[in-house]
Length: 260
Image (cartoon, rainbow, N blue to C red; front, side):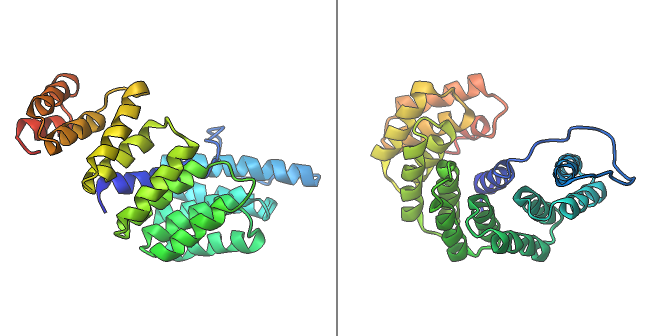
C-alpha cells in the first residue's frame, strides 16, 4: 500500500466518524448525576466528546474510560459504537474494533456510517470483497448523503485489491456527486495516468485547474502527463514551477534528480 492510499483511507475513516472534538480539558472521574433519559443522553454525549478529545491527544487510558462511560449511559447511540471501533483501531485491537462494528450493525443494520466505516476497516485488513459489500450497503441507504466519500473509499480499496478498472468507475461516480472536489480529481488523474489513459487524466487535471490551487501533487501530475505525451517543454515548465513554489517538496527533489 503506498503512502497516498494509506493516508486516504485513514483520513476518510477519521473524517466519516463525524464526531466533535474535545469540549473541555476536565477529566470526569467522579459520579455523573442523571435524572432522566435526556440527562443520560446528554451525559453520554459529554463523555463521547471527552473520549474523542483524549483519543486525539493520544491519552488512550482516559479515552477508553470516557468512551465506556458514554456507552453505559446510551448504549444505543451509534456514534458511541463508531467511536469505540475507532479507538480499538487506533490501539491495534482489531478483534475488538470489528466486534464494535458488528454490534452496531446488529443494532441498526441500516446505518450507512456503520457500513462505510466497517468497509474502511475491512479494507485495511485486506478483506477487499467484504469491504466492497459494506460500501455498497452504505450507498444503498436512501438517507445517506456522503456518497462521494464512500465511492472514494471504494476506489482506494479497489486499487489496493489490484482492480484499477473498478477504481476508475468508482472515482467517476464519486465525481458525479462532487464534481469540483480537488482531492478526487487529482486521485482520479493519478489513477488514469497509471492506466495510460492520458485523455482522461488531462480532463481531470483541466477540471482541477479551473478551481484548485497548485500543489506539489497537481504540478507533478501535470509533469507526468507532459512526459507521457512527449511534451518536454511542458514537462520542464511544470518542473520549474515545482521548484519555485514548493522547493522542499519530495516532487521538486525528484524533478531536480531527474527522477520522473
